[in-house]
Image 1 (cartoon, one colour):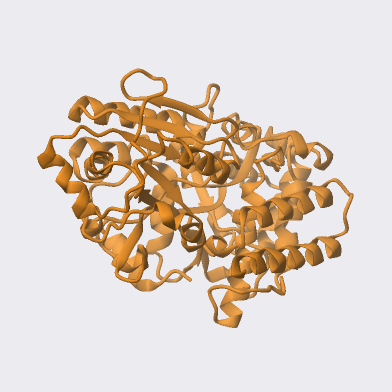
Image 2 (cartoon, rainbow, N blue to C red):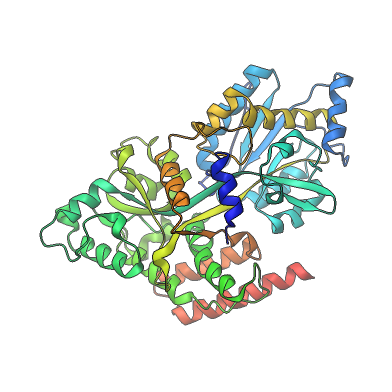
Length: 475
């Protein structure tokens, strides 16, 4: 669960959160200099520290940066940021974006090459265990000094090997213009008059099902966007939505991880998942071909009123051709599932965005990579990209209260975090056993959606998959 100390620090230092989490369809790459492939590191296999990297400056070595990005909806934004870095510093920078659901295998492949990534992402402690041999000790680095909450970093022994650079939130994004049109109907089935009065699953269900019945009057094709299940496009369900039942199970048991789960809140998961698939613009039998970008396009075109996604989703809305949604109408609701007391539940808020500097590259490339991080989070230009197209509010002391993105979903996120009556749902999916577990769970959900698997079978197979994948970690 998100600790009060973390939230307080995030808010008082203008740390809050946003950005990576979703995935797109294909990988891409470009350099700040020529838009194509570029060298990015020597691959000499040294285990160096941030202090060692500083020696490169006195030796006059010239380093390069190669960032392997896992946020494909921000591919062009990261490339633009890299170009600005190169223009200001003269340091060559390459950005490669992994395809949807392929980051782990892409990282494995890239790290086996001579020209390997100098900067890469891990999703938390489990990711660190996989890639720890490639993680440089950052304890002596300036970027670590800037981190307000030092215990947010991933450390082992006396070393610090991964630093969080964004915290973010997700929930149900809604178009307030469509919602207001619904609430103005004289024959609406509920007594509330504003979407912010939806405070539990019972009310959400009543509103959504009545909107579905009145979709022609409202001029929409469905309440929710498509429940995307194309290969690699199911992360909103097998990871983000799955976080809620695991969060509540962990809460009840007073733990932060489990070797085996009871999946005791599976019916709550089913509540909201059924609401999504039965009130969508796409028939359940057709979701296997839908991707996240299509879902967001449906929302942007005002074909639907709601979509589950995070604050990073704004970049997928405003930049689309044919976008009709006005910025002031883009709002957040928590994901309600019918848990007792959920009226006090906030958005799902946390981080899986950790940056690592490769320990097996030259000192010059390590230094260049650290310089990029200092530029991004410390310079006026770099911070303008964080507040602009990247939509980030990083957890560093270099950001003042006035340096926050104009992203409407970030504004909503901060409003929820500032509401002392609400408790954020922490991100526990960083403790999920493996990507394979998530892939298996996603396949069970698709089978269920298409009528090929009973819910009880989904529950039992999910519990078994969790147990089996966790056992592999401990071997």
